[in-house]
Amino acid sequence: MTASSSVVAEKDETGRIFYTAVGHSTGISAKKTTRTTDIKALSQTQLVNAKSFRALGHSISAIFLPAGYPNTVTPDYLHYQMYNDVQEFCSSVSGLLASRGALEGFGVGDASASATQALLLSVLKDVCSRFTTIIGAYYFGTSLYPETKTFRFLADVINDTSIVLDTISPYFTSISLSASSPYIPSGSTLQIMALCMSGAMRSLCNLVAGGSKAALTDHFASPVNSKGDVGELNAKNASRSTVVALTGVLLGTLIVPYITTRTSTYTALFLLVFGHLLANYLAVRSVVLRSFNRQRSSILWSTFRNPKAGVDGHPVVLTPRDVSNREIILDISSRIRDAVANRITGDCSLGVSVRYATTRCNTSHVLKMLQHFHEEPYVLFVAVPRSWGRRRPCILVSFKEGYGSLDQLRAWLHALEIAAMWSAQHTRPNPSPSEIEDMVLSSHETLRKEFSRFMEYMKEAGWNVEEGAMMMGSPGSVIMSPETKKDV
Image 1 (cartoon, rainbow, N blue to C red):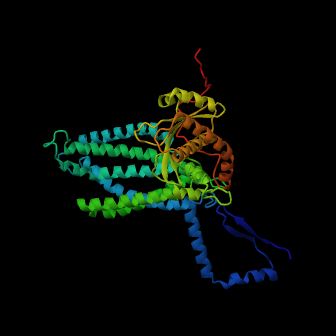
Image 2: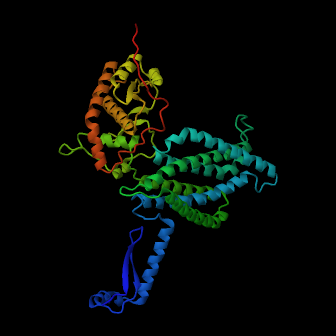
Image 3: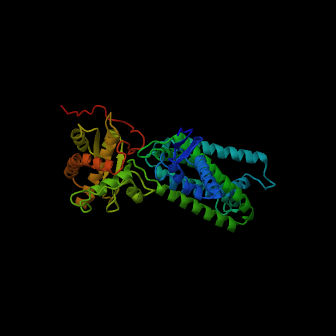
């Protein structure tokens, strides 16, 4: 038999397999007739309905999900986006209440207000916003990538503060305490201050959220066995956020006209802000990052070095999912925390200058540390705690020219080891200089023995050992050629 038709099997970017019949056949073999019997058993209506639903689902996925989903994104992408859409909805509805409060603050509905006053107030608010953007970029720009989850949640806390200030700003005019106390501003002045502060916080939120979202997008587009398109992922996220925000605005226009009293305004604002923060917290909590930062490396090293948790001589190795469940969202990155004992054991500053170290440590200690670490890409100093009664060490790390991300990790793990030894061996606040030097040397030897094994276990557990975000930005200075001068 001469075949005049062919069935071509194709697979799209999502992995869905479909068949395309090309041409027609003059005869059908018995085997093909047997294979098509089950298909003919289904009614034509059921086939049409099934194909319609599949086509509709495929179209929606193609519009709002990245190409190749789920193979081109990380497994935590869908959970994060679900919670993120909920917080976008709450934010859009609460934004209507804030916009109404801001308009009333500008003088809408007040017969004594003028357009010029509203214009000048809007200009003042815009000036505060722009200055906040400039200052915020300087102070927080280098911190957004290492502490992505912290700043992503913090951005919405700042945004909700701005929304609250805008919403309650009309009620500041009823405050009249300046008559009894001349140091307290009048109600109108408080209103202007609230509006300017809200504009500044909103611009700070946009800055922090933009940087942290960029880091999260880069994470979502970097699954283990493939690579996604960051640009397309951003476009799909913007498209989905637009639909969610539009739905919230349309629903809010039906609800907000009925929220007129202070009680109803405060109640609705509390529910929306609470839902917004809860959804954002769950979204950030669902993210599973595979790169090292200070907190994640502290959790990994503490459990890895815990002799009581190992089985048959093998250390405990946590996966990225395990560490994500233990992470503290709002934490100070410079703190050294023992994840096993769940306590703070010290503080560490990475990338400090030797000049600053000389102000915190005595000269003999600085000279000895420079000599001891002459073959290492970093130099570690142990400063005496400044606060009275404080038992935690303060560890300072200076880097040498040509250091890398693994050197930052080694320095941080070295600081963790010193803090653990300090906490285990000393009950008095200030150990002697010789004891401090012994701890540095002993922990250095431990790190030399365990670091390579630690990195091998981490790589097997699914961690991205080649990418690290230990330090916020670049150090202020690096050591080029340390020289020890002797008195003649």
